Length: 294
Image 1 (tube, rainbow, N blue to C red):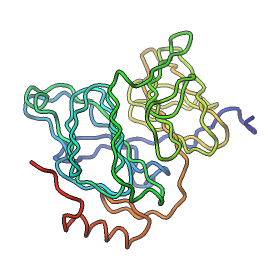
Image 2 (cartoon, helix red, strand yellow):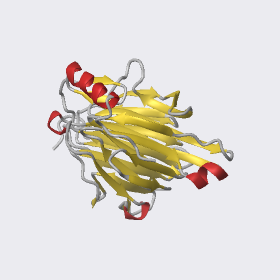
Image 3 (cartoon, helix red, strand yellow):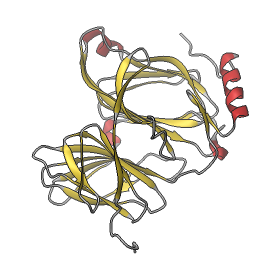
C-alpha cells in the first residue's frame, strides 16, 4: 500500500527546447537541457518531428559511435535505415521499435530509407538514451527490433485509453522487449474524458512527455501540453494521467530504476570514469570499434 498520497505528485513541468542533430534535422528535447541534464537512468529524450519533408530534404545521423548505454528508436511516421560496424542492418517503419544496446561499442548510422528520402513525406519519431549499469557497460552489442504488429496493445474497458506497451507492463499486458534494468516505456493515447492510473514502482524515476494535445497529471491535476515533460515524485506507486481537453492526448510515460553510479559523459560515450571515456575515444579513433562496410 502507498503511504501518504495514493498517486504520485508532480515535481515540475519542463518545456522541451529545439535543437539540431545529425546532418541538421530538428528535434524537440526536454532533456538534457541546462538545469535538467538527466533523469537517472534516462540520459536523453529527442522527439524528431513531426515535420513534412519535401523530396530530397530528409536528413539523418551518419556514421557515429556509441558506447556504454542503450538507444531506443520508436518511429511513428517515416522510414529509417540502421547500419553498424558489427554487420547489423535494418529498416524501421511506422510503429516499429529498435532497442539497441551499444555496450562495448559500435559505429552506427541512422539515415532516412532511400525511397522515403527520394519521395519525401511526414517524419515523426522518438529516441531515448538509457544508461547501462557498470556491470553491463562493456557487454557485447545487441539489437532487439520489434515490428509494429508485435508491440502489445491494451485498452481500458470504456475504450477511452489505449496503450502500446514497448517496455514493462500496463493494463495486464506485458512487453516483449527485454531490458537490462527494470524499465517501463508506454505510449498512451487518451480520448477526451479518458483517465488512467498507471502503476509505477516506488523505486522508479518516472516522467511523462506530451507530444499531442493537453491533459492533467497527478493528484493536483497539474496541466501539461504538447512539448512538455512532467516529472513525478517518488511518493506513491502509481501516476494519474487524464485528458481534460476536446482532442486526443498522446504521451510517452517512462520510468526506470536509477543506477546511482558515477557517470562521465562525452558526446556518444557514457562511462563511469574519465579514464574509461578517454579509452572509448581512443578505441573509436583507432578503429577498434570497427567501421561500417560499404
